[in-house]
Image (tube, helix red, strand yellow):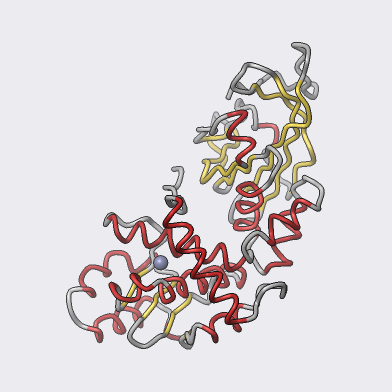
Length: 313
Ligand SMILES: [Zn+2]
């Protein structure tokens, strides 16, 4: 199922979060250092990362019980999905060290966000992390704020967007920039689409599954689009990529990447645009990058032979 929005904030809240992240990068003297110096940033926030051996469900439950109160009760059902914890009293964060380092970087900055944002620190002596968005509205808002804090710190404000603008618009660019900034390809691809000055969209898919009788398909996890793309084409609402979907031919089946495939999509005014789509399989997700190359002045649909589908969104 498509994941709930994990990052949208109103303009005032976003500005306040980014201001806090900006100040921390100032204190850590982190601007311009690549990959983003996570340890320096944590040191400037006076945050410690707990020994990794603490991070297994049994230890976490014991740890939370030792904190007492109602909190332990509430977190129990969610504990299997915990990736990171922030303990405001101890100024300590706990990070699941079984996830890849680039994801740990984001988690560390996310937890640091809870520490650096004053309302978070005040209201949560111990803040839990879940893969799923939890019901309470305030927790949801805090998650979005911490995600934006992490995103701003990891990609150093608009430094990522400026670098991306100097690079070729192709899927290899967010892959390369991921390594440069110390981000996962997933986070990098999202940032790439959200901040790119040209029209482009990134589909993040769950791993491809083979469904008997229906062929290979992949559930859409998230779609991120650039502001220019959204204005011209609207926000795609696809939830499943099947062989019949216009992006079906782009699915990297039995291979790591799909080389650029030419196809056509129609904008909000009904004009067709020749587009290029390419894909990369990170093992955890499939990332598809789609971008228009030029408007088609005739009704000709450019598709590779054998591809009859045409995008209508
Ligand atoms: Zn959080």
